[in-house]
Amino acid sequence: SVILAIESSCDETSVAICNNGKITANVIANQTIHQNYGGVIPELASRVHQQNIVPVIQQALGDAKVSKKELNAVAFTQGPGLLGSLLVGVSFAKSFALALDLPLISVNHMHAHILAHFIDDPKPKFPFICLTVSGGHTQIVVVRSHFDMEIVGETLDDAAGEAFDKTAKILSLPYPGGPLIDKYAAGGNPLAYKFGEPQIKDLNYSFSGFKTSILYFIRNQEKENPNFISENLNDICASVQHSIVHILLNKLKKAAKQYGIKEIAIAGGVSANSGLRAGLTALAEELNWNVYIPAFQYCTDNAAMIAIAGHFKYLNRDFVEQDVAPLSRMEF
Ligand code: ATP
Ligand code: MG
Ligand code: FE
Image (tube, rainbow, N blue to C red):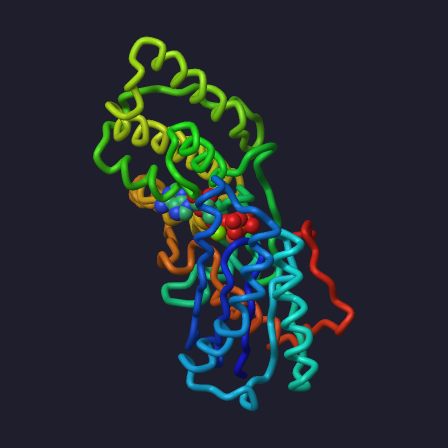
């Protein structure tokens, strides 16, 4: 089967083609306009999706060297995400499918981040645990089959990506700051500064207090030295990253032990973080885990993950009707 997939949940307009489980195109148009505002502006995101969607579709079809007539289904992100952004992708998918008389496949964006692991080899074996860390979510998920997934831990407030981005904002770095913290951390000492870590029971996370403790720390230091940030940027970034990674991996260890599972994956934008990747690789050695880390292009938002999810749903003939609507919050 040849499936065209559309992702538009946040600020990436992406279209991918999946041919019998193989990704043959994955075009991603990033929106740079939000950098001027320190965060994604929903109205702007929606408008840019409208401008990008047709050229991105054309490019994906061209890259995969398929014609519209060869398509078997249209998959799309139904949610969760920004409603105005989702609306562009969902409306386009619906009219495209109607015009070409193709079935429609709804995909949950958070399932898709996890299913990105089924694009390339090696693929995790069921059951596995996936730590999904992205801009809006932080979830520990027990994955029993492609669509039997259970959230066993999640953040009670901010997501891990937000912790990175909000810290970056405190440091006056542009949005999204996660990749920049990663970059500066490479040249710093991860043990230079210590930040209080949240004491949350179970497998849940909390990052809002952590963010506040960084804010107060920086303010205090700046009272003594107004150039504190610029003079110590690498050490600050390395220490913040070290703490976030420590918090993330501690609960992951706890979950793996509790469920007796040694197949461990990470997914979502923050899984691109080099500290997290290195930390997980070290834990794999220590605890005899088989770990699965997505290729960089499948960490942050992309339609390839929507396409592979669509592929599995197509095999089950799991289609939706034309009255389907986007959901900013979508049941997992
Ligand atoms: P969600 O998937 O929860 O709806 P989203 O789609 O906006 O949110 P993703 O695109 O999966 O999120 O991830 C974006 C997040 O990943 C941002 O917070 C960004 O800062 C973070 N991120 C990307 N690369 C890195 C990195 N190398 N280090 C740390 N954070 C990173
Ligand atoms: Mg994004
Ligand atoms: Fe995402």
